[in-house]
Length: 92
View 1 (cartoon, rainbow, N blue to C red):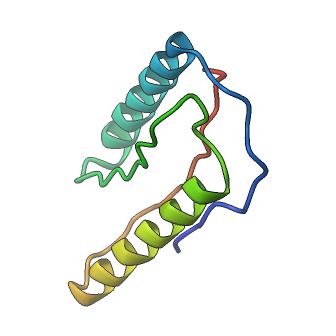
View 2: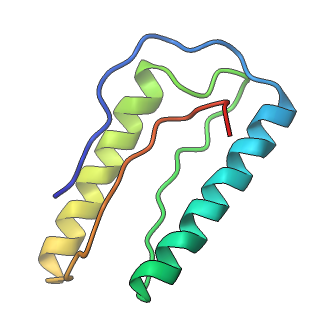
């Protein structure tokens, strides 16, 4: 049920306004999930310095973190209703 992100080539630099817009989109998406599922939401985001937010290293870090979350969930026998992985996008 865990969906890692596929490898990617480095994406172009983004502006501060694009970064802030993507955060607003993520927050709205999270609120929609909470409203739909009415349960605890686990949100995992890689915070990466610099103007390039999506590249090979970021996706490796994300996928390793996702695998760590998967192991914890299995160990604690958490019931997972749904899971999605989203790549960084500079388009809200």
